[in-house]
Length: 319
Ligand code: MEV
Image (cartoon, rainbow, N blue to C red; front, side, top):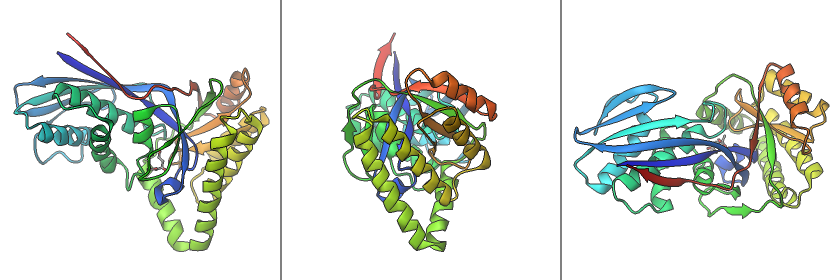
């Protein structure tokens, strides 16, 4: 029997980085997903096969910590030890989400893996247990993760998330399409979280003004977006981008893509996720996505039109 699960990637509409410090962030699940397929095997090892990082074998304890796929083995080890099953595992991974783009590819992979593993190992697939196992992987990949990526991969939809609290769901009145622009420069979120930690030490007063302002923007956007007020939503995203720039998270290419999108008629654009590379997210009037995509291409970026998805993690089995 093969056990499958898939979980969505995400885009942060407002509040990245501030969310690490306990402020709210508004995050949306995308119709781009990561999928995990799990089989139990006799040999007492964890085999991980990924469309992106190749194949690796991990023992049930210790070693190979530097390998890109090691965090997946950590998720598996946690659930294997909870199940007390004397088994090995084969985990096959694939993803539609570009890596290092700030679109939650790692969290969606860990959530899908944890969910498929719970089913394969006969553990009750409750969201709390899946969350905890997925966070084992996230803590390994990111430095001090807020948990926002895991939460939206579990639940789908649009969430106002605050660290350590149950998320509030924002209900959109109509489907929402967003234009993403990938700079082509993959970036480790953990490194950018350290940039902000350094800023907070060097300039604590400015840091706290930025944090409070970003929190206000995320909270306000959680009202203006469901109301369908695209003008105000775009404006809020633009201000959020400026604040992230002050924190040292933007680059000339991200700023160039943001400016080009706005010149092409977009209502709002900002870097999204960790910054320092990765992606921008752009809000445009319905039907104007192609014009905005062209503006992104003109600045050397790769556009991608994605839809906000209500679907969180889902599990199925075959064979
Ligand atoms: C990553 O998607 C968002 C950050 O705020 C980091 C985190 O919340 O863990 C940059």
